[in-house]
Length: 183
Image 1 (cartoon, one colour):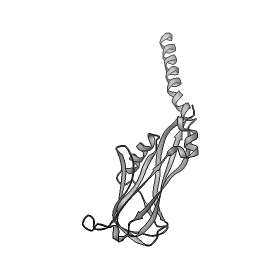
Image 2 (cartoon, helix red, strand yellow):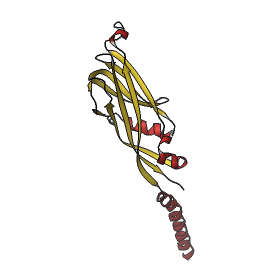
Image 3 (cartoon, rainbow, N blue to C red):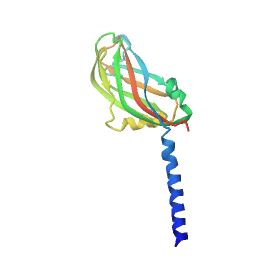
Image 4 (tube, rainbow, N blue to C red):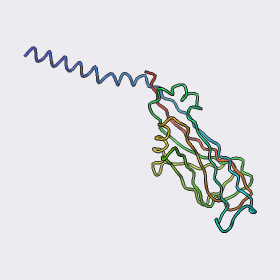
């Protein structure tokens, strides 16, 4: 009986020790908030360039790369990154040459076959006006998957405006909580 109790206690201590290693290792986790961003500089051609037979509005398509390593904190912990968690995403219109309406369009973030997108329709573009890129269809989960690849990815806006000869910048910001572990 004494041998059984000693063996049981020994096995219990071994179990606690090994299951506790992961808990102890997680104490060294480093968590920080950061922002990844891109400027999408859109120029919509003037009316003379529009082919009325092809589209009802004035088409545009602009994209820009976002490289997570451009963030100092991400770069510092790059080899020890554990996870990314998008907490918010926004787009802010800047440098609007004149007010215009986006009749239809899409804002997206993509890498390879993974795409998170947000439709836009009848949206009045004006300086400092913001659009929330929400998680209504699980888009942030896809952005987290893209970030887990730890490579540059693309932000894009494509659509049609109500008139041509206009330009604007869409400043996309992805707010992210990052977890790294230097052990």
